[in-house]
Structure formats: C-alpha cells, structure tokens
Image 1 (cartoon, rainbow, N blue to C red):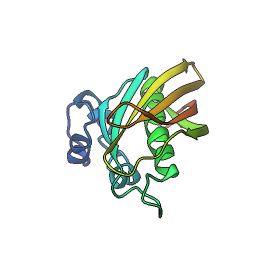
Image 2: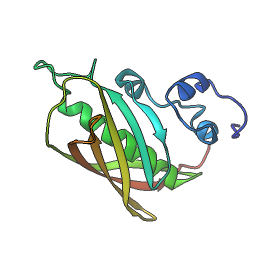
Image 3: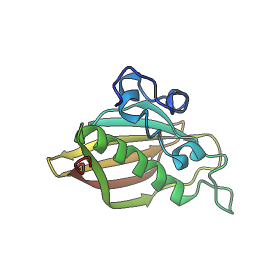
Image 4: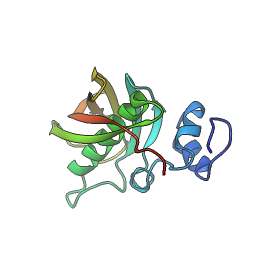
Length: 156
C-alpha cells in the first residue's frame, strides 16, 4: 500500500521532473511516464485548475530543425491529463478522449512553456486549454484536451 509519505520506486524521477512533493504518493508507483522523461518535460505547477511545465526544443525537433508539431501535442496532452487526473482524485482516473492543436509560430531553440488552464471540471468530463509560449511569451500553439473521468476497477 502506498501513502503520501513512503517514497516509491520513481521518487528520483518525480523530483527531477519538478513534481510537487504532495503528489509523490499518488505517482510514486507509476512515475511520470517514459515519454515525459524522454521529452524533457519539467513541471513548475500542478493542480486541477492549472498545470505549467517547460520542455526543451533541443531533442524534440523535426527534420527542418523546428519543434515538432507532435511535441507540442505531447506537452499539451501531458499537462491536460495530469490536471484531469489530479481532479479525478483517489479511486478514479482520467482517460483522454479528444485532443486538438493549432500551431501559430515555430521555434528552433530554447524552452517552450505550456500553461494548462481548466475550461470545465466536471464529474465525468474534464476539458483544458493548453497554451505553449516561447521565452518572450509569444504564443506558439494552442491545444484543447478533453478527458473522461472513470472509477478505478475494483481490486481483485
């Protein structure tokens, strides 16, 4: 049984990714996911209403040397899914059912900041808008993600 005080096997990963200490018990058995680690996503804030993280452009580019459009979507889905999962709370989980993105401008170096803001926090559906910006605050892309909140299956 995991509690909010016993370190799990992913303690170092969570700390390195900037996950707030009060969420380590929840994520301690699962970590943040291999793709999140590979993309270099680092969390600055995490809550149902607002989650903020950065991601480096380096290592996440497409052949033309700019941030891959899919990397924008990975950041957006990561932020929206974590926010929805925190909203779901103990005994429930969130599953993505829709994600869309519009790309406004490219970026070829530096950090991208994703800011995820709740649009709707319902009992069964949760929707967030995620805005990706560069270091100067210019909007790079806008995404929207909807998650369905479900009860966990009973333990057998």
